[in-house]
Amino acid sequence: MLKGIPRPRRADLTERALAFQNPRLPIPLRVAAWLPFARMWWPLDASALKAKACRRTRLTDFGELAPLDVPLELLCRTLDEDAELHALGRLSTHYALLVALSNRLRLEDLARRRPQIFERPVTGPIVIAGLPRSGTTFLHRLLARDPGLRSIPFWEALNPMPFAEPIQAPDPRIKAGARVLKFIRWNAPEAQDRQNEAPEEEVMPLAMGFSSMFFETISPLPGYLPWYVTTDHTAGYAYLRRALQAMQWIRPGGERWLLKSPQHLEQFGPLTAAFPDGTFVQTHRDPIRSVLSLSATMSYASRQNYHHPDPHLIGRHVTDLTERLLRASVRDRARADRRFVDVHFAQLNADPMATVRRIYAATGTELTEETERLMTVWYPRHRRGRHGVHSYDAADFGLSVPALRERFAFYYDHFGVPREGH
Image (cartoon, rainbow, N blue to C red; front, top):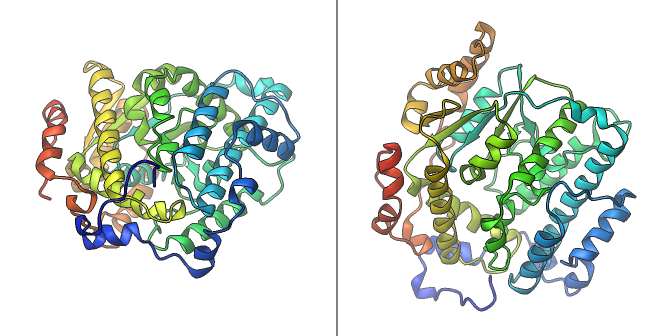
């Protein structure tokens, strides 16, 4: 999976870990993963990708508001030299970077042609920040029932900027998103949670400014992560605000944005600088649940990039990432900052509407009877566990529950998070 890091021995793998390490792709994809000319067809080279994005969009200005050349070069180099991507992995990674660069070109072109768009502020967004499996997706989709809030559906998260103007009806980005989802479900049939019109994280708007945790989901990236972790992402979050300004002009909707991503946990400084009048909702749950679930998700999704994903390497990376996010959230949050609302998983699960009322009280806006009715009708049909609950063992990822509890002790104590059985 990463050059220089040997795969775990078969004897050291659980049955589930062995299945992660040796995925069974559909036969056409299994054949395509061995295509011999992938390095030539889909280069992971910064200059080649930028040139291809320029040809694709017929634009040349990438702008200077957010970093580009240094992170792109580091990312391409570590993906090309350190990650043992198979042919489909090179294709999907090449495509993801190309999409980010193309969207950035289109955003800069829009800013040049229509500067008045960026005079309208992004007012008082609600931003959810929490680990996976801490209730963030449920809360995100519940709040999205409010017609006064606007979220980013999957198809728009994939391509925030339109392919061309004037925008056709229906928007061709909707069909493009459906095609991507169709491929994901064919390649990884257990990944069924995403829907084309459902609220999605602001992954691509952040990736356009290279302030996105998304790239870590492709692979642990030893040549890129030191830059990402030590960089001040204030400019990247300003670029997110710039993208939202464009998106609210392109597709009018609710007056207040509803955003969500676990990466915000380590970016509270840049986040609050970009949206000083925002309301920031931090969800809490035993982080071991998140580590095991995210390790499983990444191990399974890695079939799209690698012949033999390494669940033990992924487990170590996810543990480091989780600790990094949580320590930053403890370090960077002022306890007296009333813009933050803490939501514990058990409370959210027991009484979702009580949590919603607390969030609306923090925003200073009214929860109307109609909005409450829409939420109350929706949430009983979308409660946790309606499709069954996945259970994973720490041993699947070469981890130990007692060691994880020790690493996360600072977080349990700081936020009063109860330990769950595993």
